[in-house]
Length: 392
Image (cartoon, rainbow, N blue to C red):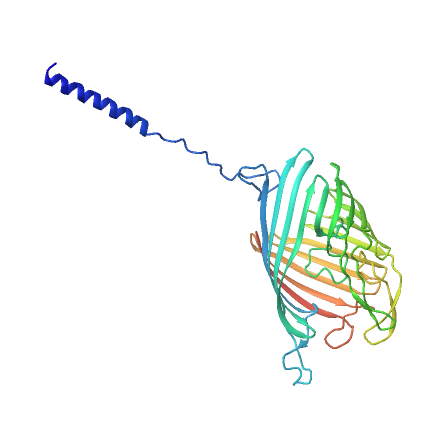
């Protein structure tokens, strides 16, 4: 073997070894598949699949700013110099800024839709406390409940409110109140395919109002359940193309009283709808002292009948008068001759941003719901409201 052959063989061997090592060193890993967020259109707009799951989630809420004057409980409060001014009075605005966030998670299971819903609101409010203007910040858990099929457990608005629907599409709909507020509850709602619905539920109730008896002693009408016995509710309803009817009854286990409410909704046209709702409650008359020290009788406590006296009625109308504007009107009246009239125009300036000016009139009847006007009499009072709301 000569030197030339030796050099050529060595070079070939070196190239072969280097190529083998290079092949071993260059290993390109396969990229992991990227799972993008997918739209979930099973439950309507706004839902998307949580990556890696079959759960659909919707996050929404609103930002709101309210300005009110007059018949809203915030007129003619003492100013900071009232002691020097011989109790001079100063009109002021009612103002509230709110941020509300909502979470809605749903999954289909062999037992039906599994849903978890939560809503929290944060408020900054200007109001009067003891006749002096104050600002305050608060937060509240509006809703926190779980649903599976038709079963629900958690905290939300009372079924005495939601099953028949709240009153009209007005801001100040509680001049003659129609239902208690939020409460812990356990319920089942059956929804048929023919428009028929039925509901049964158990609720905890809330704290109530303070009243003064004939001896001048203060009492608080508590409605939270006593001796582990819950409030009981049941309701039936039917909806169709023309509107619907609904009925709900409730038993207050604390005060051993009942209340019922019925409602009829009518869709007159594609742009006009109306409703009429009536309520009746049982109660044991209680003798109390009014603000002037006079002995009067009024209907005793009932968690599901917050209106004055035995009965109350509510009626309203909504009409879409333009592509961006809807007019809403509501009237209410009860056994104690408390009367309320509210009218507004909900105007959608741009998609997701609604401006609502509203006019309110209230004429209080008999104790205990009487509200004097600015002159100290009960001849009625006017108020105004302006709401800005950004929905998302």
